[in-house]
Length: 483
Ligand SMILES: [Zn+2]
Image 1: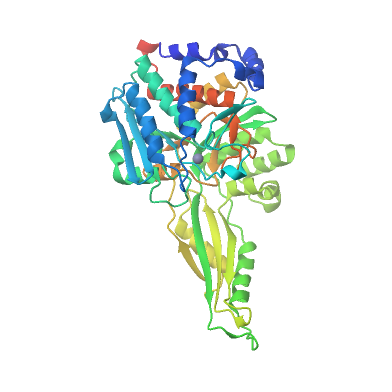
Image 2: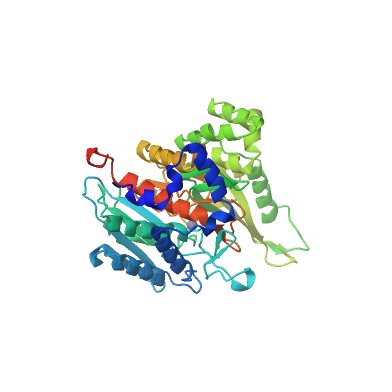
């Protein structure tokens, strides 16, 4: 019974695997875009369009407006006013928290998506970033991928569950949040809601952005589920000196001293360490790699820490970042005049710390690597620790089952991000967050955070279907009554 909506919605997924592959390949071509969407997908597209067309940038946009618009959608669909809250942390900084009530047999499931977007200047773009366009099989506009597809999916699937009379075992809580895209904003909705409305967000687990599908040569290649993020912490390195006239230089010079320290840092590498997430990542990714990298992965997984054996990994920046903490110089500033000895030399060092390593230990290792007591090492801001989510069997098996059904042969890859999302606030608050969307795009070509953001129309619809099925499966255990 609970699958009624789905069979009406997307018959392609009921086909045998071979036929589904052929149809899926076809669905990625433009021809499929002409297929009239189901009523559920039509409603989704209306909501998606409304959300993309509300400018939610920090400079001129308004997330209150977007949160209000989504609240109106839910109220119109019959959600009681008591279960739909628009909560603002300030002008133009709005969040929505809504709830579809379940039986309460299990603790709630939280669905979270941010509704703010990265700045987009009309004059730089090839099209208006705040008008949703559908061109050549792609949705175009700021936020079409990051993160309004997921936000609109969540709103529309809640409406669909309500219309179907779906009664989950647990409340499904939806949080649409502000300021995720700003690196350290007091208005970050996930952080602010956890600080001020903690009970509204109480949940056993959360589904967020951060994962997603990767296309290779236009075809789905991997569906990732983000379970961990590295911890972000920057340091200011600083050397002070009385200075003086540059016509009478001395051996002691803050620029030279700092440079020497930075050179020692450049030659230093943090130890190689795996955690359950990166372990699972490498186990699965080995099969997708060429022989040289696969051999190095095998060595890594067998506990080999020999630099030469691991070189095929350490020489690839993305793999290197998976196996160790990194700290890199990113900014440099020194001196006050061309004809004066410098009084100050400063560098910024940005660290991305493995989520199960202590920040204090990394700081000690950094100080030891720089190895000069005259170079002060000062933390910039405070790191937000972010323990990895466990490879929960229920979540993993559900994601794997749905991925096999919708994209036969495409592996599910657990990932640890080098960057961060709002999942760090959730994990820090004891809510394991799973970054998974089933939204396939072409990494590097989708314009996320950059120009001309776009994502395939069918990919968005398939992601919406995937999320509908995933959330439904996680919100209600199959029992005798539903079998
Ligand atoms: Zn995002």
